[in-house]
Length: 312
Image (cartoon, rainbow, N blue to C red):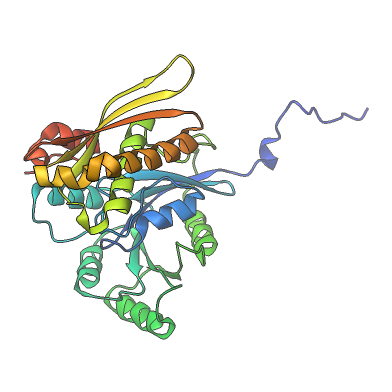
């Protein structure tokens, strides 16, 4: 008698073993870490802007490559901290490397190997994690100098692998993604296949608004600003109502954010609302208020809302 296979049963031997691991991206401000996380995930999960230190807290992006789930930690740029907020951001970056299967040092290939980068290489030298070098922005970098940068940095620290990518155009990103996946340990996936980030919608809303502040105000925007989500509730019709505060330190900064007759804050709100509606796939009602709060960066509650640890 010949037995036909039961379509309701899964043949375990035919199912590829799953792998899952942690990849932490570190680098100097503006190296393109957030753009690279978005490129590896395949959609936007981290905010980006040309302004340095856009990323303030750790964010986890979830990418799939075959049977492997990559947990990508986007960290704040590492720099010489001056204020409490700076120290908290740098602490968040280094703590993000703990327990990582791979630490990827992302370097701006156009800017090259300055003191900030070489200092970072020195700080990574004694760490136990496998460290990759990722030279980013190859689409705008001087090609002959890229090899010089790679040789110089590998002389300081023999990296396990070196990659040349453009997170903006996607050049080299699939090769990097496959190489990362190949090093991840066997184990179950930590997140459902359709989940791309660990950020809550409430946290995502604050980040999207903050991104629009960066994009629309450019150099006018003071670093001493933050976005707090005061309330987040679902309406009976399925839409979401969000109230947020934009915190600044001085009345002059409030005037910059508001714009003439409130034109700037309306535009910021309109663009953030449109992006949130697309990301959440439902209507969003976004209400923004600009509040002067001197010394907000000494408020423990603000740090908690941003996902940062309070540091002395």
